[in-house]
Length: 269
Ligand SMILES: NC(=O)C1=CN([C@@H]2O[C@H](COP(=O)(O)OP(=O)(O)OC[C@H]3O[C@@H](n4cnc5c(N)ncnc54)[C@H](OP(=O)(O)O)[C@@H]3O)[C@@H](O)[C@H]2O)C=CC1
Ligand SMILES: O=C(O)C1=N[C@H](C(=O)O)C[C@H](O)C1
Image (cartoon, rainbow, N blue to C red; front, side):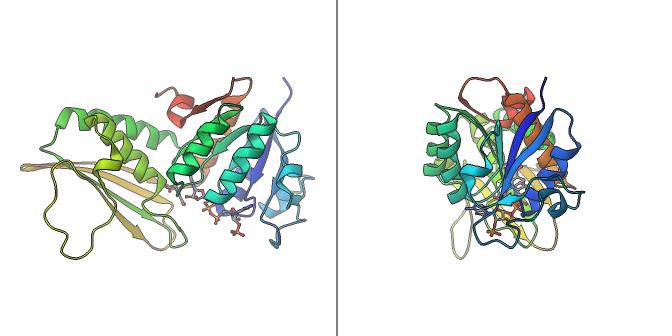
């Protein structure tokens, strides 16, 4: 079968460069296009060279429509505004949209679900196997432990991260809420500061740490009467996320339009 053609958005970013390297080393796919924000220093550079590889013959563009022309899937780890604009472009062309961008608001997710009527959308706050397996374990633990066990989610990321809580922390929070059969919107306490009062039963709390070069640490704590369970995932390398995104792109080939999570891709759904 012909290699699958993949385009990378936000190509000069931490994940963009990692995606270019991962595509180059993965059998069955090749980079067909890459673009960056208009005015970026990376525009015009060879995508391979930008990612620390030999030249790939794909120049970084600044016109999204041209960059995704001919692609079968677009890998998108950028920012919410860029993801929303791409959702429309991918839907119009029936191109699979693999979304790793975090910090998405409810309206952004609604736009992705709308786009999924016309193309495959795979969206996840974390594309790694480990985190998606952890989420299914958290769901089971939350269902088994019940309200005597308070759920707190602690995450730490590098100093450059702009959104909080992390997409992964929210994904794990959703898993805990699903296990308890409650809505995360109704139970989440996303930060605490000052005289906030005692913890309400059923709250799902989040705490955010930022610093240094931490790739991504997440701990889900179930704190009960006299005992505590901590479930932890440590990401040591961004390649994890890039490999997950490329796996999702390959999985999307030939599928009907629809909205999917990484758990669907990995068979953990
Ligand atoms: N789901 C997952 O598994 C993972 C998700 N992420 C998420 O991916 C996103 C990116 O992370 P990271 O790579 O570290 O961030 P970076 O800031 O390094 O990269 C983002 C890139 O996207 C570019 N960009 C932003 N807006 C646009 C636009 N409108 N058009 C084209 N390019 C644009 C940025 O350009 P500029 O610098 O000019 O703004 C930048 O080059 C974050 O939301 C992060 O949380 C990260 C890792 C794993
Ligand atoms: O911004 C990052 O770096 C990461 N973002 C994702 C998140 O918000 O959870 C995934 C990973 O933890 C790295």
